[in-house]
Length: 133
Image (tube, rainbow, N blue to C red; front, side):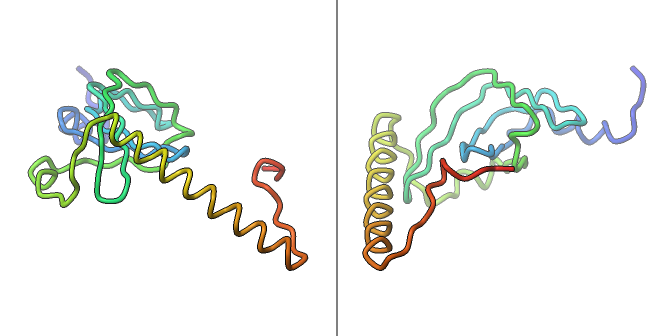
């Protein structure tokens, strides 16, 4: 095997769990199996972790390929400290229901905010009408 500078530390990290935060807000946890210069990742035994308040749930996803442009953060998880968390693990169904309720509450709050601004003669452009370029 040829030695490539900078790969020694990566080879040591292969069997450690890593956390990946995606641009769409999802959090993935899995074993990093491959990474390239564009931050394209391959994760093994991946779970998608959903947080709502002090609760979390893990949805098994298996092997996950992530295109580098979607990666916001990549970091190693200390397995010894992971068990010291104050968060409570709940079932997948329960966390999805909590997430749905939180999203509904957020949408209601946003509606009230937009209505209050309209009553005062102000208009807030919707996010889907904004040009990204």
